[in-house]
Amino acid sequence: MDRPAGLLVPLTTPFDPATGDVAPISLRENARRVLHAGAAGVVAGGSTGEAALLDDSEFAQVIEWLRDVVADGQWLIAGAGRESTRATIAACHVAAERGADAVLVRTPSYYAPSINAPALAAHFRDVADASPVPVLLYNMPKYTHLPITDALLATLAAHENILGAKDSSGDLKNFSAFREAAPQWTMLMGSAALFYAALELGAAGAIAAVGCFAPAEVAAIWTAFSAQDKAEAGAKQERLAPLHTEIVSKLGVPGVKAAMDATGFVGGPVRAPLASLGQKELDTVTKLLKTVGVAPVDAA
Image (cartoon, rainbow, N blue to C red; front, side, top):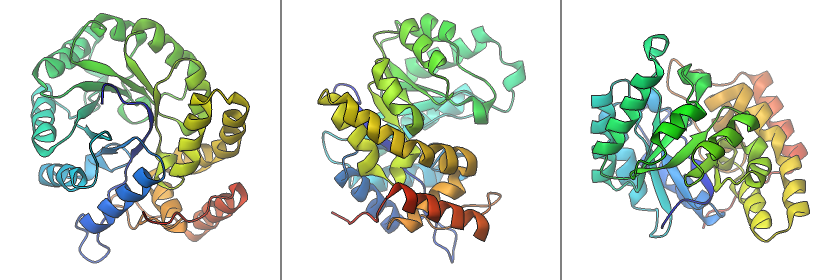
């Protein structure tokens, strides 16, 4: 348990269709299945987990429920990014108290146009200083509209409590720049479509939403690459890339949950104001899964 490596699955948060409450049995069952399929760990309360739509008590409870099924030697990472530095630090403490091994901290988004580089660096530094568990920075400009730059990483590279970063920019040049800015950090790719290429650039692994419904297939890229079978890893990457581009990237959390329902996991409803997919989109997801050959995953 030195540093995370391989596939980490950013779990969705299942909700009871009748009450809208978090469904703990489904949450834990999904976690068991992805870990059994080869994931090295899971992320709770991240973007794919509808973090922005969970209240503080739900966030804490999700981590605690997952701690019950994430074994020693497997990673439980919590998405602790909040809008203020104070609230982010508080979330880091809650995550640690409930059993998280590390926290994933995004950039604040509401006041993004008003946050300059020194202020953002101070935010991450203050969070890392106060967090009881190691911190992973989270670059997700699609949602935050405030990208992390390689220059920012370079200013924070020496911080002892920052473990690394997840880059969900979808830009390999950006990922490469991150690696050069903080070569001692653990760098994780946020796109399953770029997993193999990121491994070639020195990635330690990926936090990939495709793993929510095709964990064995994504983990197989890591396994093949680690065994020096780059031809096999590349072939698996080529087959799985459309699952990210057409489902995760284009359809977001509703698409991921629909794909989970179609592959034997519990996706279920999204939380408003997100909306479930229409029939046309559902048909597209089902057709793509059949084309790629992703079959339902049996429980452990």
